[in-house]
Image (cartoon, rainbow, N blue to C red; front, side, top):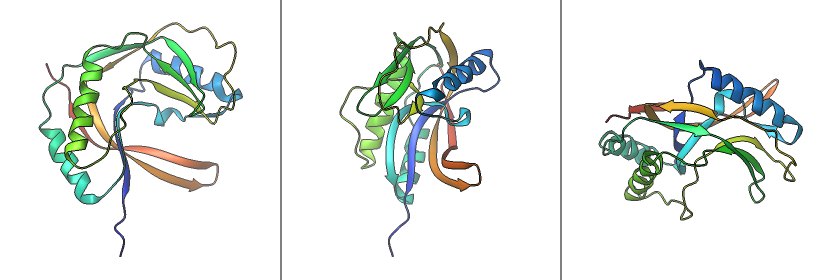
Length: 182
């Protein structure tokens, strides 16, 4: 019998109790005219996409993440709206990411490789996906003032399909979190 796999990724979750999160939700709502918006509870910054992972690989990742070198907590100012034609998404990104952000992403990608999970070779580009299935680049993008978020944890997330009245798509659920510490 074929082993069931889980679709996993490492990410930074956003605190929902901040004024900037509410401003982010308003920005996402403005994107509804262009494509399928990301539900507020699914907004996150991907650190390493893992894809379909076996239970054994998941357990290896959980163990390895607990022994990751320490990375200090950091804040990100998201101030650039953009569009990727190939993936057809509208995104929000920092013009200048804090140095510990790409460091954390690299550590997690290297760890995934060590667990036998292939990783993308393209450079890491931190962002929040706001809308998907956007056929053409919106012009002009709405003006935004920077949205600031502080991150003191990263987590391993699972993508689960949802099919219920009024909701089709996926839900991202955090399986485990680890603290960032100086």
